[in-house]
Length: 492
Image (tube, rainbow, N blue to C red; front, side, top):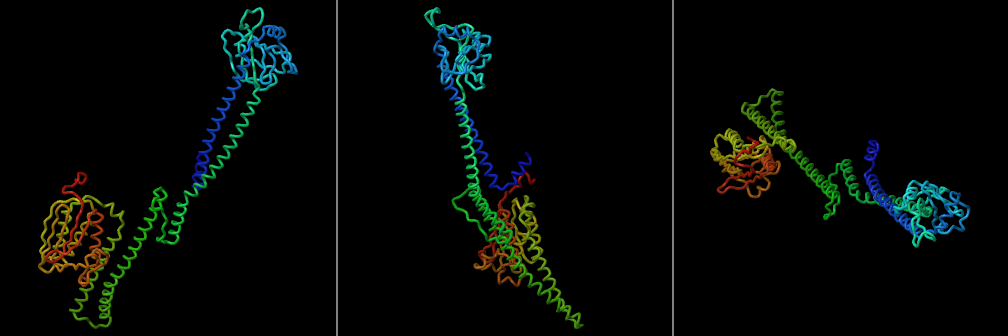
């Protein structure tokens, strides 16, 4: 059975569906056919039994019984043209007497006799019970017959005015089953033929239905093979808008997947292109400065100390910018699964305090005020801290010397307001784009990825971030994060 099950699973889906449909129809047709055959058999035997009952309802003349018993036993004759009184042979049935000892008595002109059974002798021994018995049997020629054995009721002179039961003798009446059996055999053949046609038709219909139903699966398979072969993610599977079955849902899911993959590839290619462009500037500057230093060493013409110091400071600054850019790129390249594994309950006030300490070190000449109240969120701790540091770094970078930065955390809303030049209205829609930098800020250090990382981190935590111009000048960064003022029980 295991081998057959394995072979069945290895068949194509169309073949399996066709076989299952054919098997289901075959089972249903077989059940209906067998039920029909037994019902017809029961009806035919009921008709035979009714005919037998009619054949024994007429009393037999006592004289015929006495004469037949006197000549019993004897073999059946070769002709059926005549009979003896009430025990004559008929076209559709024939009769005989049976004694209590099992001896059967037939007319000398009968062509066949019925073999007796225990039920026949029981009726002869106890005729007063009035019970009759139906059974299937054989005649002495080996033919199948339907037999009815009843007490023998006789009439005639010398026994009174009415019929009475004759003792120790029973009357047997039989009908040949040849015609009945032929009818049942013909019916069985017809049902078998119809069942076979039905099963074959069901198999063909199942194959046609499977082909029609699996056509979208074929299209999906071809699309997947095309994508695997060509890496072309622009392919789409047509889906009817009103359809909502499993195939339509699978097709929509595939289209959504290819759309997401295409968008991800496009973003990846854009990131690589932008990263290459951003890396080119510091690398070019580094190469130029290093070539100047190398040429000075090779030619023996020393660079003035002030210029040499400026070159080394430039090399250091470019190395720092490269390191920052590479770190930002690594942050952007991390997968969703890697980030999701480290999500936990974070005390936002503690993360903000740590970021504020770093911001005060980077802007010692600035005054940073903080109003922080407890708030707990679900996020990745390191990513959340990096995002807050990026916001504070922007505020430090654009604040004038001796300026003030106001930081407030209240019920999950973090606002960072600086008093710098602010961002022009036409540049606000682009501040969260990767590698985008304001024309006025391109001379300042930075990779153009800081706010992009902020936006992605906040979105992953279920919040949102905005930048807007502040009343009186400067910029306000607003971060809203879902959470609670107290830590949940599992985080304690």
